[in-house]
Amino acid sequence: MIVITLVLCAVLAFVFYVYMSKRVLANTLTVLAIVGMLTSIFFMVKNDHDHYGLHNVTTTSTQKIYSASPSKQLPMMIYQSIGTANKHQVYVYKTSANAKKTSHTKAKVTTKNVVKRTTGANRIVTKKVYREYKSDLYSFWFGLSGNGHKYVKETNTIYINKNWTVLSATQAKKLQKLTSSKAFQAKQKTAATAYVKQQVMAAMTKNPSLSAAEQKKVTKQAAAAYQAQAMQQLIKQVKAE
Image 1 (cartoon, helix red, strand yellow):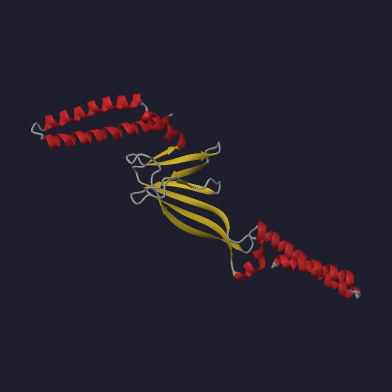
Image 2: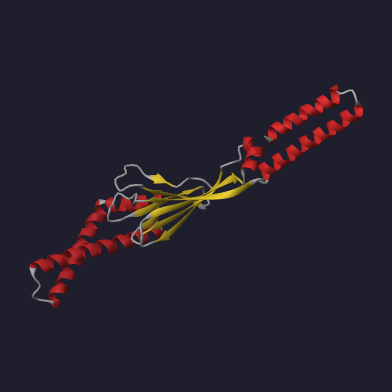
């Protein structure tokens, strides 16, 4: 409406000044029309620059997330830095356990991502801030400016379990390359066999009457423990590089 008021005041100022014969009245009305025009311009600028008539409104949504890692034994949150200063990151995840495609947080400087550990569900809580008109009156006057429901910023709080590993995209690629190499796999197999044998012997020394089923259980536990330790060591190595 204020745009219409501006145009109307400009037209009236022209009409009053040019077509009215009584100069005192014409000048008075022209001045009033110009004042109305300048007032309209003032509030238009104030609305656009200082967000006059607007206030911030926050909306909150929660999205359950799943690991983007192909390995179920190694759930992972992968991020990609945006720019060279490493001030902003995009985090990659899946929205369902069987999703073929990954999703990611927005690659905007107005998007802030915070990673927190949780014992609850893995999820992203997104708080988006918009500018909305304070009342219908402000919307009536400034609605045509397009400043209503304008996106300002958002904050993603990413809650992940303690067993998730957080790596950059580059680190994740290095980790995948190392674990898929035949030399690494052969080395790990030899080391794992020795570790498992040692643990089984220690268990049998402690309990010579260990049954075959119990030995099998110790073997399985020792193999899992070694794999977890070896992976954590490899992750530390990748992060340190």
